[in-house]
Amino acid sequence: MFFTIEPDNGLAIYDQIVRQVKFAVASGALAPGQLVPSLRELAGQLALNPNTVARAYRDLQAEGILDMVRGTGLEVSSKAPKACRLEREKLIRERLRSVLGEARQSQLAEDDLRTMFSEELTALAAASPSKSKNR
Image 1 (tube, rainbow, N blue to C red):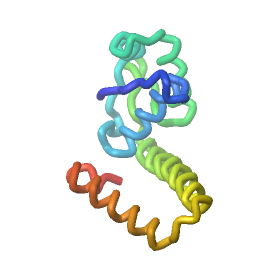
Image 2 (image 1 turned 90 degrees about the vertical axis):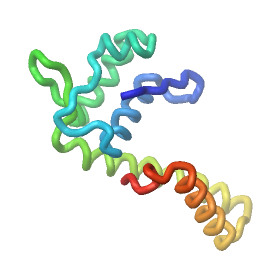
Image 3 (image 1 turned 30 degrees about the vertical axis):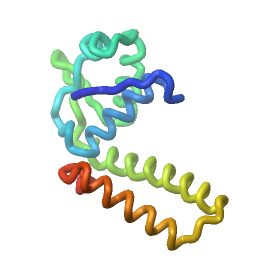
Image 4 (image 1 turned 180 degrees about the vertical axis):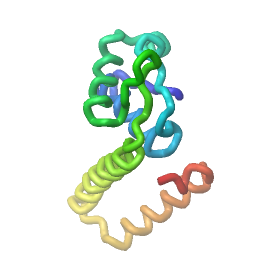
């Protein structure tokens, strides 16, 4: 699993890790029972302070996304996929609501918005056909 950390995007680094794990679970890239990289391994890969990764993993455990397996590490919980899909949908809806609010303030017509949305969705599907159907 690959993580991408963007220090300048406004989100705390631990929150970026949390979101990326949740999106990976939601998309099926991480399956229930699959181990996530160890704290030290991930901190080394990303050149981060281990405490940052520890905080992300603690948050994911507290939310029931990851479970501790004694002597082995952290694995994706059986209930994580559903919870992560719901959270991913919630986050995307919030972003859409924000964009639509901005479009409304700009007085764009609904038909124009629908056309733009459809065109962008088609462009995404053309650029990445295998990922356009993930839910």
